[in-house]
Amino acid sequence: MNLLLAPLIVSLISSLLASLIVIVDSIVNNYGEVNININNGKKILKVKGGSPLLFTLASQGIFVPSACGGKGSCGACKVKVLTDVGEYLPTELPFMSKDEIKENIRLACQIKVKKDLNIVLPEKLFNVKKYKGKVISLKNITHDIKEVKIQLSDKIYFKAGQYIQVVIPPYGKIKQSTQRAYSIASPPSKNTEIELLVRLVPDGIATTYIHTILNVGDELEIIGPFGDFYLRDTNAEMICVAGGSGVAPIKSILIDMFEKGITDRNVWYFFGAQSEKDLFYLELFRNFEMKWKNFRFIPVLSKPQEPDKWDGEVGLVTEVMARYLETIIDKSLPKEGYLCGSPGMINACESLMRKFGIDKVYYDKFA
Amino acid sequence: MKMTPEMIRAQENMKPGVITAEGFLGHDDRNIIDIIIADEIEMEKLGLHFSEVAERMKEILKFGEKGLGELVSYEHFLIKVDEARGFLPCPFQDGVYRKKVVYVKNNANNENLMFSVLSIHLIEKHHFLQGKGSKFRLEPFKIKKVLFEK
Image (cartoon, rainbow over all chains, first blue to last red; front, top):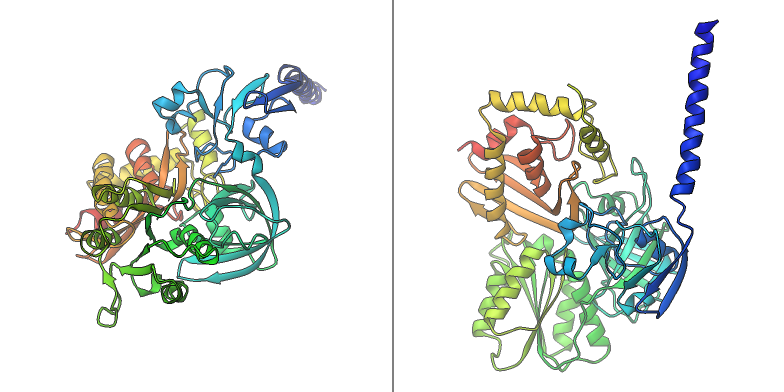
C-alpha cells in the first residue's frame, strides 16, 4: 500500500510546488502597465511590462534595427536609455564601446521593461514599418548569390542604398523565427516590389532558407527601411567600390540617379570579383556607360579563369582603385567614396581613399 | 564525465537553429564533454596542441584577410576569407565573433579545410572541435595534414 501511496504523494507535492511557482511568478514578475517616454515626450507608449524593450517597441509598431531578431548576437538594436535599468549584462558588453557605456546606450533586446522608461530613438525609426510580401522571382545570378524579388502588400518609401530586414520563419529543425538584414538592390521608384541579393553563408540560418527552402509564391515579412547609406546631394565625383552581394545598394543608387537624371556627376564604379563567374549585371552597368557619359564601370578580377580573353583589370580591387586615383582620375575634383562589403574590404578602401584626400567616405559595412 | 550547468547550457545552444542552421553537433549524440575528452586524446596522439593550432589558424586568417574576399597565396597555402553581415555568439556564452569563414588549401598535399573565427575561439578556449558530421567539424588528422604538413 505504502509503495502505491509514496509516488502519489510525491506527485501531489510536485504539482503543488509547480502551481506555487506559477502563482509567485505571476505576482513577482507582473510589472503591470508602464510608460515608455520616447524623445522627451514626443511619443508616450502605455505598454504591459515584463518583455524586452525591443519586442515591446515592436508590439507598438516601432521597429529598432536588429539583424538577429532579438537573440543578442548582432548588437544592432542599440538604444539610449535615460532611466537607470541596472548594470550592463555580460551579453551587452561585447558590443559596447566606452563612449556608448558613458552615454547609457543599451541593447534593446537585452533589457526588460519593468518600470517607466525614458529612451531616445532616431525619429526616422518612426517611419519603419512591417510589410507582408510574396516572392515573385528567385534567380541564381552566380554560384552562391541569389536574386530575390518580393512583391509588397503596401508601398515602401526608402532612399536608394538603405536596407530592410527579412523575417525568416521557423523551418526544419529551426524552431524560432529570425531576422537578417539585406540591402535593397532595386530603386525607390519600384515601391511595391523590392529586389535583394543574398549570398549563401555556410550553415547560415537565413541564407540556407532563402537558397534552399524559399519558393516563388511564398510569403515573407519584411521590416524597414533602415540605414544611413545613401547618395549625398553634392556635386562631388563618386568613387564606388562593391562586389558580390555588396553590389545591391550601389545598384539601387545608380539606377535611382539615372532615373532622376542625376547624370552630371562623375561616377567611377569598381566591381571586385575573383573570376568571370563571379561577375553579374554586366549588361546593366555597360548599358549605363553607353547612356551616361560620366559613368565609368571598372570590373576587376583577382584570378581570371581565361586570362587571355579577359581584357579588363586584374588584381585586388583596392590596388586597381589606387592606380586609377593616382594616374587616371582627375585629382583636382572633390570626391566622395561609396562602399559596400566586408569590414576588411571597407577598411582597406577607406584608408586608401583617405591617403588620396577623400575624407567623405560613406559605407554599408557588413557589421 | 559529469556535465556542468554551463556545459548543459552550451550543448543546448549547439542544437540546430539556435546559433547556426545545422548546429555544432552534427550527428554526434555524445555529450560535449565526451567529445572534448576524446578529441583531446586524439590531438595528443598526433602531437597537436590546441593553442598552437589556434595560433596557426589565426596566422592563416590574417594573411587570408589581405585578399579582401579573393584567393591569396601564403607559404604553401591558398586561402580565401569570406565575411557575412553580423556576428555569431559562442555557444559557451563567452563572446561574439564576426561571421568570417576561412577556406584553406595546402598546395603540398591538396588537402582542404574550412573554419570560422568562432572555430578558432572554440579550439583555443574550449578545446571543442565540434561534433562528428557538423559542417565545421575539424578532425585532428585533417588539422595536421592541412595546417602542419609541408
